[in-house]
Length: 267
Image 1 (cartoon, rainbow, N blue to C red):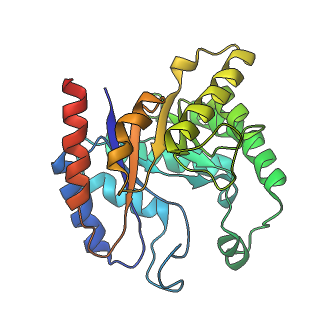
Image 2 (tube, rainbow, N blue to C red; image 1 turned 90 degrees about the vertical axis):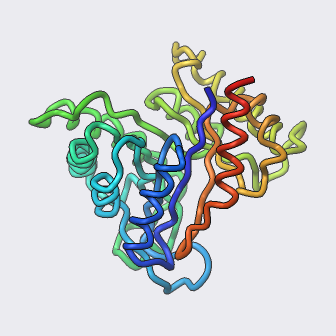
């Protein structure tokens, strides 16, 4: 069954806008609700309104009832891994066991600089992610009370040499995008990108002795790409993800995606 996930971007909006949007999106029948982990808007006014990820997730856990929630994705180096595990466990309890722990290596330099974190390099941030994931899992196993269930780990990113290897080792869900900033031989369109990344992840799973079917594939698309949805799913996507910006959180296009999902799942 194909799912539709959304991110409510926590920028340019008041909390009551986000609360209303989360409740409305769940009522519409979305399959997963995410928000991002940044400290400043990523587009629009760079100094506009913005809310922190984990405190917002705790609040959204209270106002929703059934939809899985999580960060897409939390930056592993913004928080001590043991603390992150405890935060995740706590939000999991608030939500009644609905948390997905999305995590990545981080990339937004302004977040790092203004909040006093060492930005480092792509390599150092990926090494930190690989080092910290076992610590997160270990702390989760020690907490009292424990999480409501096994919290799925989602890893976001498309790097073929390191990120997808780490995904094959640790993740239950992989999140990538149906686009690439770098042209690749034999990759000419969005569906080709998804197919290529999926094949690389499958290869890493084989090397690590994992069944690739154990890792769900969540693919981010532009909300305008509905005409490519079938091709992207045929290329290996289990879930389609779209981002929705504030302050209005217009769900007009989302309703079309949900109608497509329902038809696709009936066929």
